Image (cartoon, rainbow, N blue to C red; front, side, top):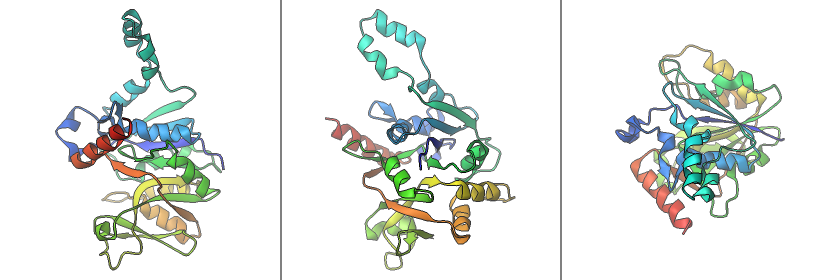
Length: 272
């Protein structure tokens, strides 16, 4: 199936990165000379995505400023003999960007960004969902999103990241059946009880059935967080298929200082 749309949630406050995220949106923290979220975007573009829905906070403007044209900066570069740098700041070509605001006092959780744009996804189409504060880095420049789309086919798919067996107790671990189809998430199991060493990092291809399940779940009234894995579980229980695809690249996370430093070391080191 050809998938052309992606949802990238970036509305979180980034509390683990305070105080810097008081002034800089977490998705805009730099990895090398690019914001973290741009690694997610570029992977989408390499997979043929040409329409992206960013789910942003109420006061978000840095992300939109990054992707829009800056006439004054372009003029400055041209006047000062730096015209060769203009392509570095050019808007994305051939890509339609949407900035959808998620209310700070509304429902929250990983299911809500999908529900906010579910009506914009035509029936019968699938959509890619990728968090905006982490990414999969490949040395050869291949697209992890493209691999996920290829594995999904007409169904849905979920990316899994391998971690050492002794580390599984810190994560939600993916259980699969003999066909590598999703069964459930086992939260923070002991190494002995873990069904695998693949963890969920909230990177999906969702078909119409999975989107409908998320829309219905988000319409219910809850007092706690709306986790996207709950409606995915409902979708699978109703007979839906979610293929689990092990990531080939390296998982890099900007959500913690340690993870952000590691991501910079990997990306900058690989570019030398």
